Length: 72
Image (cartoon, rainbow, N blue to C red; front, side, top):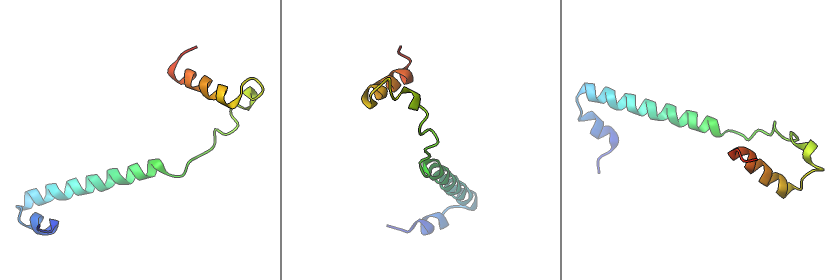
């Protein structure tokens, strides 16, 4: 199987530019995707501490699931 560069070199200049554009797009998209993953933030930690006495951790997990899907 030929190397990618060899295959691209066989293309006319206008198609080589398209390949370059596509590769740059893919690299940019990949970079943005990696940035999204990043280090987890825990700025939400403690946000529900006032509910600590009202619910167990399992009950709170179920309540949060209900809130997410809009059930009451």
